[in-house]
Image 1 (cartoon, helix red, strand yellow):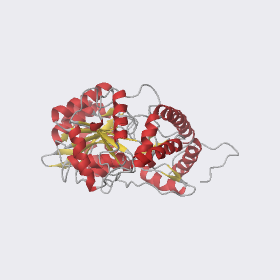
Image 2 (image 1 turned 90 degrees about the vertical axis):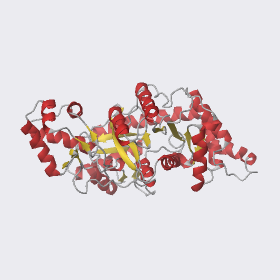
Image 3 (image 1 turned 180 degrees about the vertical axis):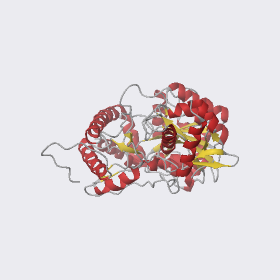
Image 4 (image 1 turned 180 degrees about the horizontal axis):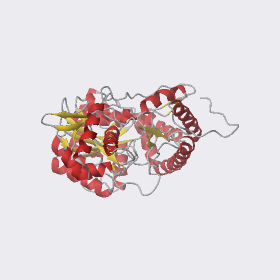
Length: 482
C-alpha cells in the first residue's frame, strides 16, 4: 500500500542513485531499465516524485527527448504514473504491489526450513535450565505475575547495557514475551489508525505486521549498502511527520548492513530535533562475525525519551525462551507495563530465570555461537558460488543471513518452486511493504552446514526449472534427496 505524501528526489540525487546505468542499446531503454530497477529494489520508494524531464536531461547529460521516451515507456509498463499536482511518481504494475505473506513454517520431514533466520539452542541451555529450577522455589511463593519483569533479569539486562557503555538502571528495562511483543507494544503506544510509521526497506517482516496491526501506515525508507539512507530518512521525517521510526541498526535483517557511529549520532540528533521516537531493534547486536562490533545505538548519555532499544534472547540464545526487552526512559517503561496487561500479565518466570543464567554465561555461549555462524556463513557463500554463480551474494559482517540479488524479479516464483525441491524460504517481497524486492532473496546461514548444503541443492534445482543457469555437476554426483 502506498502512502500519499510529497516525497521527492532531485536530478543530482537521481544521478547518484542510478550510478552506471548506461548499457548497449538505446539510451532511453537504458534509462528506463535503471529507473525500473531502482523501483523494483525499493531504492526509489513507491509514491516518490521524480524530477521533471528537463531536470533529468540536464543531470544526466541527455536530450529531453530521450528522457521523455524513457518516462513514456515506464508509464506504459505501470512503473510511473503522472498525477495532477504531484508530477510523475513511482508505482508498480497492477497486482505487483501485493506484499508476500509471511508465516513461520511447521516442521515437515525432508524439508529444510530457511524461512526463519534463527539458530538452535546452545549446549549450555540444559545446564541453565537446571540452575533455573534450583532457584525457582524462591519465586514460586508469589502469584508469578510480573508485568515489568523479574527483578533479577531486569538488573542483568541493565548491567549488560552498562558494560557496553550505555549507563542503564533496572527501572529503564521492561521484560517482554519476546522481542516481537516489545515491537507490538511500542507500535501500539505511539501509532494509531492512519498514523505514519517509518520503516527501513527492506526490513523485518513482523515489524511491518506490528505497524499495520496498530492501524498505522508504514512509510518505507531504503537501505543502502552502508545502512539506512539517512538523507531520505531525514526528508521523510520532515515531510511525513511520523509517530515512530523503526530501525535495525546492527547487522540489519535482511541486508546485513550496520550503521556507523557517526550515522547513529545523526539519527539520535534527528530524533531529538524532530521529537520523533526512534526504535532500534538490537536483536542481532551480539552476532558480529567480522571486525569490531557496532557501537551501542543509544549512545553513552542518560535515558532519552526519543531513543528506545529493543532486545531479545532469541538470536543470542534461543527463540524458544520467548524473552525480550525494551530499554527506554523509566516513564515509557512504566506506561508499556500497564499497556501489556491487555495482552498478558508478564513473561514466564521460569524462562526469565533461564535467561538470567544464560546471560551469566553469555561470553562463553556467544563466543561459540559466533564461531559456528562464521563457519556456516562462509560455507553458504562457497556453496552458492559453486551452485548458483549467477547470484550476487554479499558477505555480511554479522547477523544470520545474506540478502542475495537474483538479477531478475523471480523471487516469489523461486520460493514457490523451492518447496517442491525440499526447501522452505521466504521470497524477497515478504521483507517490503509494497511488492518490491522480487529480485532479492534472504538466505539464512543459521542452519548447520549439512542443512545449508541440502538447501542450496534445492534452490539450485528450483532455479534451473526457472531457466536459470547452473554449472554441470561433477561426474558421479547426485542431487540430494530432500
